[in-house]
Image (cartoon, rainbow, N blue to C red):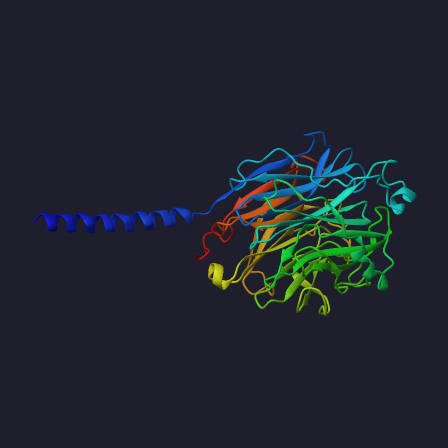
Length: 417
């Protein structure tokens, strides 16, 4: 009798556990979205924060980083690189850190000085890019100074401290056979580590023409096969042609078959993103083409892999940018810049050949953005958010949006765990 009662209780508990498990799974799959500022203009002594980047470490720490612009919103001037850490999924953040500091006297880029773009003596730290190694836990950190020098450092304690910067500008000298560049830059956004261990950073080089000295650019990559000890230049991926017109800021993603796809900003009259693919992420790039599904308002964009068939049931790649081709002034001519608003996230199930889902994150003023994926599958989007009451785009904050696949797909898709 007693045994029968125990068996009855055990069976009841088993059913209850199953019900609770199903209920918890159902709750976990509910669409989820929230957002909050990480860097706010006018705070901590800086006029504006721009050029966001975000990565997630092996341990799950989120590292958000950007350019902290002291005096103005311009790309040249008194600019530092700032970083914050979150160990609770992006709910709270550390105090700002400024890890990119190079000792010794620093000089302005000659194109900066000659065109008097910035005030004399103001030094520009620009275009930070991080790679979080999912295997070793090492965080690789690259940045530029005055769009003419590049540096590398690393962290072995989850981004708490970083090694002394080592200059790697010499890696860019190989590009001179294609272009006698006066300006160099990384990404921006985040770099990637391929499955074979190669570290890959999209870059662009330019002659330094135009009012901002970023004109006549070409897009490529630098890469390291020795865990960041040395860096080499890849082949030019997107040259400067009338069709693609000064291709620059570039995002990269490793495809399921091991190839690498680049997605590049350009000033072409098609106003579409430029795409090309390499078998190894460094050389033998395919001829670039326009993806008609991806609008090009002439702004930074981001790519990240959300899952593979092995890790999430399906291959999924995400893309973000200001998905807009309109101008409030009515001057939307082919190749012209468009209003920076309507930052959206797109989802591809076929490795970027088509984009099945598009959802707006910020319908109002919004610009540069960078994507990452938390260890629990939450999508992280750090983006420049403007004041909706403003008459033009000026980043009021770098805001972190956190959402799941269920929110992005209106409950039609979920990661298989």
